[in-house]
Length: 256
Image: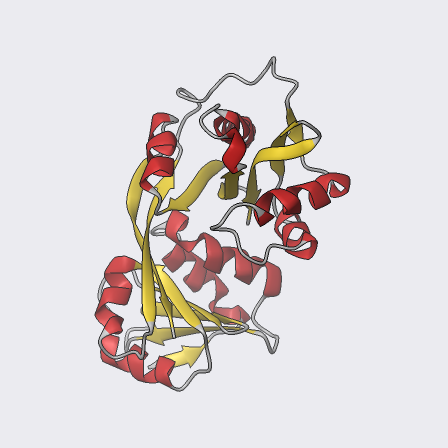
């Protein structure tokens, strides 16, 4: 039976999500921030007769995230999801594959999910004064960088401020403009999600983004946090693998 969760289920939910903590950065982070008692964030779980969880569904505004560790009733969850108002659903590819045939999907995107366990292959940025921390005063310049990178659409000062509330970022500037950057978000005691890695088209193949990622990841790892990231650009993937990122699975996003 799919039930709406509340605080009394919290320990059981976190234990279930901790089976694969990297895949559940979004869900755990949202639960920590929003709890269970509000009108824009909801958590449901399928509970079997023995009281065990067999799948978790989270709704934040009009975004859904689904997770199951092993077996789950795909038909039951599909019927439940069909009654919800949402624009996209994301989760482990092996889980969403089982839901797909019963959902009305317009398009989907599959990305690789990776984590970085060690600083071993990171570039040494200790002596580099070019890599600077993103402060509120530099966010406007960062937005201008995003405006010239095709894959980043509709990025605003407010978007970046919101991400930095749960993370940090580094950038490199040349000729009085930001030309490369990398950010983290959804940082917890154990993890940090790397996002927004980008380089100005006129300044690529110079290693600038690599320096930003290295600085950011080294800092996270020294604090005991494991950097994680998604990618679907093979050229970017080569850079991440060179830095030591290891793929742990695939992640799907379905758009309705």
